Length: 161
Image (cartoon, rainbow, N blue to C red; front, side, top):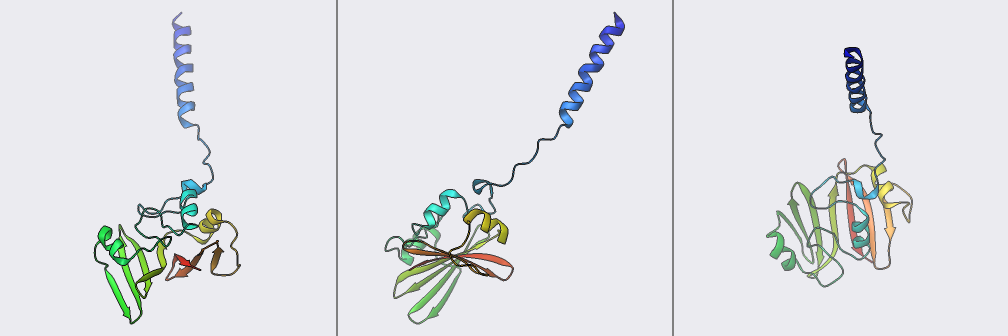
């Protein structure tokens, strides 16, 4: 009887050990799984918003008559400002992510976001660009979504057509 109890205990311990060591295969990243920032990340909902002129998770949008005063009300004064007469460029760094706002004649016409995504991740998330090349351009009804590499990082540029 002692041998049977010992054998049952040994089998139970071996089953437990083998269950603990079993590896679950990792799934390939899906659009909703890739996150590199806490402010702005590329995912399925973000892509839909970009197509409407909105940068999800931020006060930045091109779909209405947003002004810099709207952005400043939420984010405060910009970290950077470049005055090029009729064109103004503002820069913000929010939670280690850099945002650039381009304004002409008091109207915001272009938004940029620095990304920590690789070329392959961007193409996986966004799909095939409208125009092939080193700059990925996705033409939508009212907006152009563009990805360019700047100083070893990719930058998303959302602009009105």
